[in-house]
Image 1 (cartoon, rainbow, N blue to C red):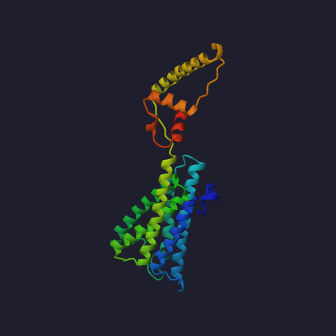
Image 2: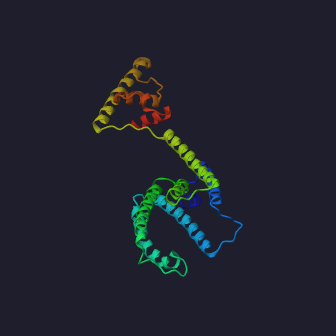
Image 3: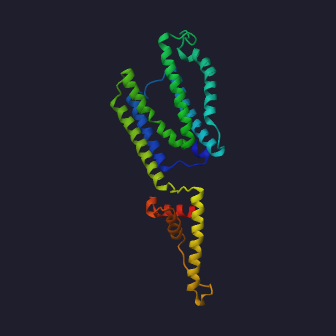
Length: 281
């Protein structure tokens, strides 16, 4: 949300900002319920872990913003290819960091000699990570970064669920309350987005080339008929008569009638229907 306007130029919607603040409040409750205490000193290992966790959030935010910026400023950019290149860069980086951070100080690295029981988990995590990052790249190309980041907070819900079923970790009441707040913020926000999209979705009619040609010919005949009526109404029939025409109503009545589509069948507001009719003309 903080990167969206400076890098893309699109302001964060008010409802998204409110939902993000609510999700942050839920995250605070989640951490407190998980036993995080701000009044206790943090040791070196915890400090390193927190730094990497913050870096993960920062890099994810930059990834979302970069992908959306590329889709706006450079349409056709294959960001999934960039994701694949990122995986290639992760390999040497992970190998460099694993002996230092992977097993803790004073423990011999198992990078090239993993225990047999670890191979299955490594394979599962490798596939899961590839799917997760690829889906994130696709989502970030279609949705604003602030909204992707908001939906991303559902990780707290699903992560806790997996921890309960796989690791038998029972969450505290505060953690459950925090997850419920996050879930409510995301659901309400997305419901508002879908409602707004449904209201603003343009109503379009698709024609074949042959049908469109018939429509144009029919409209020419209709226009000529209206012109003849106007001339008859003119004083002396000399063609200087005036007629008042509602352009939207005319387009709706003339065009849709020729396609066999009733104006009321288009759905949505009358303004949407009128815009659709005018676009056809």
